Image (cartoon, rainbow, N blue to C red; front, side):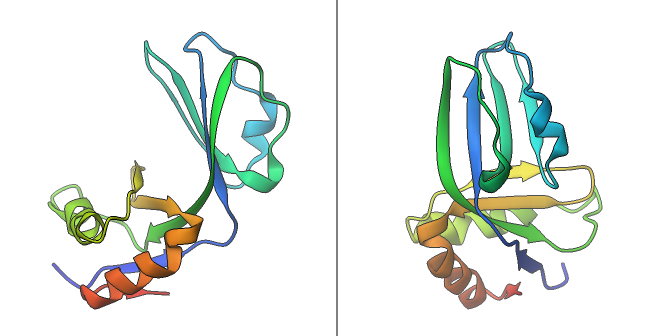
Length: 129
């Protein structure tokens, strides 16, 4: 596997948990980066913290996340990319929230742990830009 490059995205993000039958707030679709997942148990939404509109009740919000994007398109035949990022972070007691898209992975860490996460990843042979 070639060297993995991670790009730190600007801004802070938040995760919102709503009831599974909740309506997705329309302002979510105006976000530059957002993710929506609905399961039988919950509706989870990831959004930029600066552009949050009214959130219907009941809900839970986990704020102050920073985001690292794996640069480039990851081929589906690649294995262990997420584990190679998650393991050194876990060994250094840095929790994460992972989000995968068709092309790549996004790793979110608490904003106050971002510098430590970047240092850990650099020390584990990742390039962080």
